[in-house]
Amino acid sequence: MKQNNKLSIFLRGLIAENPVLVLVLGTCPTLAQTGSVIAALSMGIAATIVLACSNVVISALRKVIPDTVRIPCYIVVIAGFVTAVQLLMHAYLPDLYAMMGVYLALIVVNCIILGRAEMFARKNNMLDSLLDGLGMGVGFLLALLAMATIREVLGAGTFAGIAIPFLVGEGYSYTIPILTQAPGGFLVFGILIAIVNKIGPKKGEKKRKEFSCEGCPSAHLCGKVSCAENTELVITSEPEVQGTPEGKEGEA
Image 1 (cartoon, rainbow, N blue to C red):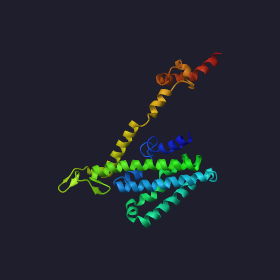
Image 2: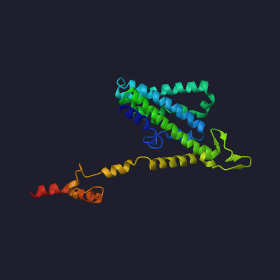
Image 3: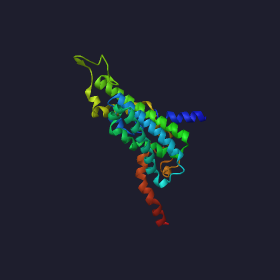
Image 4: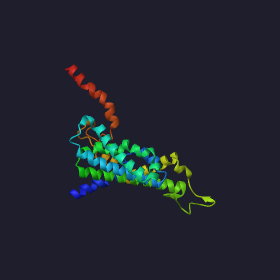
């Protein structure tokens, strides 16, 4: 059971709670860094490292950090790991560092990282927080790679900077250049979100099936029939209900 639980913590960030395509977080680096596969891969790996490390540290300090200043403390921890990643990339991967530009530093305020610190790491142990960080980071990476592959292959006719012969060559180019620009990024982003919503779990439908009058304060008005089918009746009846007790008391 414990192994299944640990595995589910990691896997839910891939599809069910994908931070980009389901939770719609981190859209700024997603749209900006998916023009090429290399930039997307670099951003995804950097964010995953920062996310996993910050989750572990915040989980370890969750009983020490006061609630009143927890958000500033989280940002300090995240900023420390982002700075370390920046320095390492600047020293050993200068080309990637230059390619990512300001978006590498903006990982500090990435909603995915801060959100997981607030929603998960501060409430769970270090191992679970590590798995959550890795799962969300890999989900973020996969979403970036999917977008970048579509945009670069169809928009520029290349993959990771390598030309694809049947798409581009001397005297011909079968590409859609707008995909490498901002409008193309929004288009691909919307299409991928729609696909994930289609194939993913239908949470909305499940809630509608489980909806009933149990616990509803107005259930007696419609004879305890599903309020989903009698919404108009309940709405139109509410003003009368509010006035009825007063009228009865006045008559009494």
